[in-house]
Each structure stands twice: as structure tokens, then as C-alpha cells.
Image (tube, rainbow, N blue to C red; front, side, top):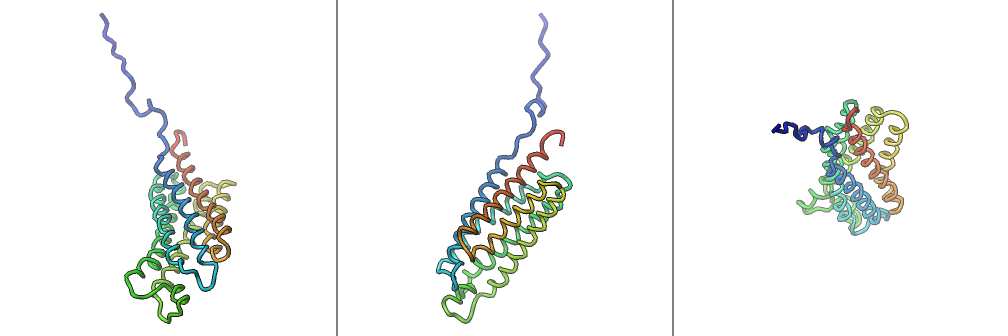
Amino acid sequence: MTRRTDSAPTSSAAFGPPRRPRYRSFVAVAAGACWTIGVALVATQARTDPVGAGYDAANRALTPSLVLLVLFAWLLRSALPGRSRAGAATFRVGAVLLLAGNLLEFWLVLLTDLNTEKTAARLGEDDAFWGSSAGWMVFLLGVVVLVAAAVVLARAVGGRQGLVQVVLAVVGLSATALWAVSPLLAAAAALALAAWLLVLDRVGQEAAEPGR
């Protein structure tokens, strides 16, 4: 009687190409959704002068989206092809700066007896928390760095797809300027950032496919 010696393949190839990291996709969707909601909330308080009573709380509601953005940037660090690594690193720096600026302006103030600059102006107070101006400048620096990251990533991709990435990033980040104009316009612009994150996730997926 002849014994069968063949067995099922045990190599990873037997299971087909590696699957797309679903957790990275989930983080991309969650970050985009939270960013859109947070921007809309801030816009409801920032469109008046002085700002509304819920301005600080709305900006704190934006914090989860920035945490998720930093997490997405970290998950994306090894997913992009070699030419995009510099852009991915710049993306991480920009995301961290956005979060740092938000924390400095709207969370560190809770450890003091002062109010943020815009809230102090609304209440007619002369003294305001020093971190308000500093935090806003750090946040704006993060916006500039993220735009630079989009340009670097777009050059690595090239063509129309690269141009689309830059447009999505610029429009999505411009929501921070539009929240003083209209909640609807700000939220619409914020959706572009959500789309950019999904595009970056897709690029990471394609880079992981065999033969690329």
C-alpha cells in the first residue's frame, strides 16, 4: 500500500495575496468622518464675532479626529512605496503638529485659571491663555506641512492621480478657514480631506499587491 506524501501547501502564497489591513481603512474612514463632524461643529461657533459660547467645546470635539489622523499616519508609514516614504514622513509630522496645536490651545488651558483668547474676548477679559496664540500657530504650521506632504506624495504618484491628491488635501484643509464663513461650506470642504485619506489608503493597498 502506497502512502500519500503530498500535503496542502503551507506557504503564505497558498492563501493568495496579503489582505488589505482593514484596521487602517477603518481608521481612515473614522478620521475623515470625525474631521468633518468636528469642523462643522467648530463652524457653528466660529461664524460669529465674538465666537459662540461653545467654541472651546467644539474645538475639543475636533481632537478625536486629530488623534485618529496621527494613528492613520503611523499605520501608513510602511504601506507606501519607496518613492512615497518622504511624503509619508512629512504627513506624520503635519498630523502631529495639528494635534499638538489643538491640545495646546484648548486642553492645556484647562490647567489654568484663564480662558482661551477668543473666549476671553467674548467675555471682555483682558488676560487670555498664552497657549491660544501659540497653539493656533502650531496648528497652522501643521496645515502647511500637510499640504507639503500632499505635494511630495503626489510627485511620487505622478499624473492625474497625483494632482487629485493635492486638490483633495488643499480643499480638505481649507475647511479650517471656511469655518468662520459657513458650517455647510466648511463641512463640504472637510469631506475632501476624508476622501484624501481614502486615496492614500488605496495607494497603500496597491503597493502591497504582488508585482508592484
